[in-house]
Picture (tube, rainbow, N blue to C red):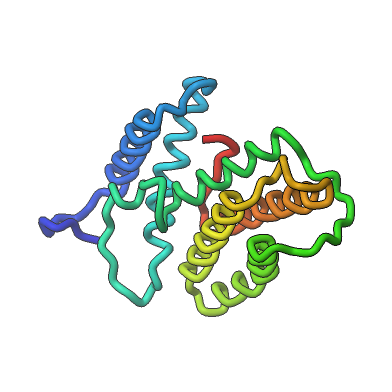
Length: 196
């Protein structure tokens, strides 16, 4: 790995830079209330390292890539912090209300069906990524699941659903999505925070 100047990049320095950028971006967002100093430091490290790892792993290993620290740590787009933020957002919903685990059989809206279809594909994606030695397949899957969940959440209310059955279904979908995100990111060696 070389920098633009042709010098060797020091990995420890890059990690420190990523953590510093994560700290700066998090403070700019102004969402650090209620965190202890230790929790904040852990959060900055989780975001910084997650951004670095995700950016590197999202690219097909046979292709060349240019690492951009600022782009890698954005809270929107095909980045680790975007996935981490969505996971934290889902966990926030689930802290307010948990699914009861009861069986539900309501008719499915397209956004609900999309989440179910993607969650059903999770195992096959893991197998394919392992078989082809290509973690980018898992990174792409996780990102697409995040996009689908965010569309679902924008379109449909979870805790104020139109019926108890719908509320239970959507809480279960949120829980399944959070589990898939946490597992997928863990397989990529990336932690996801419970809150952000």
